Amino acid sequence: MWVSSDDRDKAGRFREVALPHLDGLYTVARYLTRTAADADDAVQECYLRAFRHFDGFRGTEIKPWLVAILRNVCRAEYARRSDLVATEIENDAFKDAVPLWQEEQQSPEAGVLRRQDAEAVRSMVAALPEQFREVIVLRDIDDLSYRDIAEAIGAPIGTVMSRLARARSMLRAAWRRLEGDGKAEGQVGDVERST
Image (cartoon, rainbow, N blue to C red; front, side, top):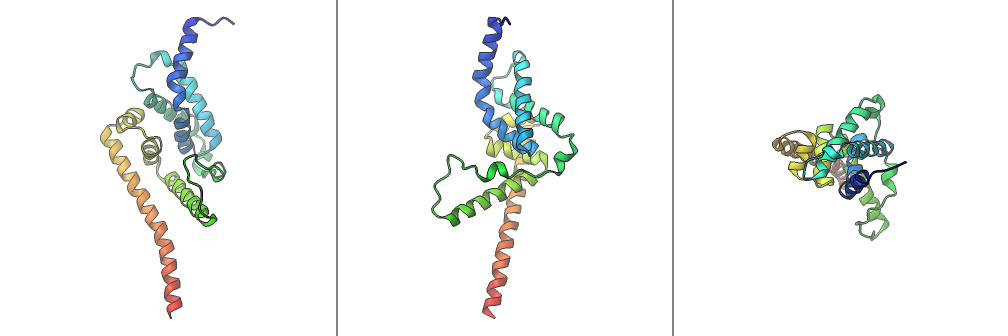
């Protein structure tokens, strides 16, 4: 099969600008699709579509363009599956994974507490409605700017900021409820012991 030098140049340019964002896009896909297998498929389809239409890309930053494609893939291909809504995040992919930036555990108890906190945060993010989960993942996990998020989701920057504030508020309230449940149990035990 004969490959022209233009095709090789296109592939090289695409690899150079698009592949550095692969891990970030996988993270976004993982939160949008809620399963590792679907996230793999969505990212692969995103990169296929992006490469196919790479000649038409006219922006300066490729990441928002890739996120917009990924978002469309997730919605078009995976959101229509009825079982997607009913499934929970597969914690298996996260249980044994230790991030590279994580400090060494000082004790087994600290490790258990840290893992429980991480699982609680992942569950809380996963429980957010899609429009809020999407912006919190893009901003706080994937570190996209407000402008890039607005471009990726096709909404004004004000809407992005509003959704982000609301998502953070929802997460804060969920965390307080979680902490409140633990404190309430401790208070009940303290009252029982003192009587």
